[in-house]
Image 1 (cartoon, rainbow, N blue to C red):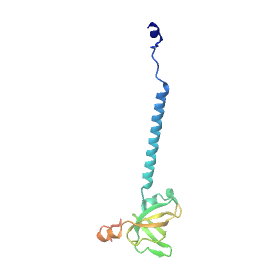
Image 2 (spheres, rainbow, N blue to C red):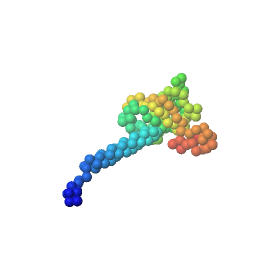
Image 3 (spheres, rainbow, N blue to C red):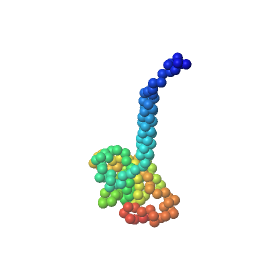
Image 4 (cartoon, one colour):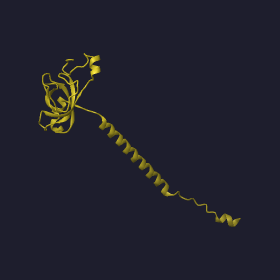
Length: 161
């Protein structure tokens, strides 16, 4: 038995270093993956929102916006609509006497008319231009809503239709 007791080595052994390093590496990879997923989700949500610039905002930022495609919101000026063979041209009013001339290509929606708020997708002709080249006109309310609530559809100038 003395011989068996001497063969047992009872000195403490340090745990392998590779396990804790591997664990830290795994945690690091998981953190990077979670951050990447969060970044992708936040970018997807931000890009899916449909923002628009009012006439006043767009004119104040016209040099920054340049000819970038934006959504421009304003009220169609009474008496300014000219239906053309490829769409319509009209003036959008903002507040404080700000106006933008819109040349929209494509068929305007059925509810499109003067003195209603609309959003036009397009871009300014140049950084200093008051001409807006539109590709799509969106009326802000449906026919069903307007028919059910004729006095609720109000332009920013306070008039209703």
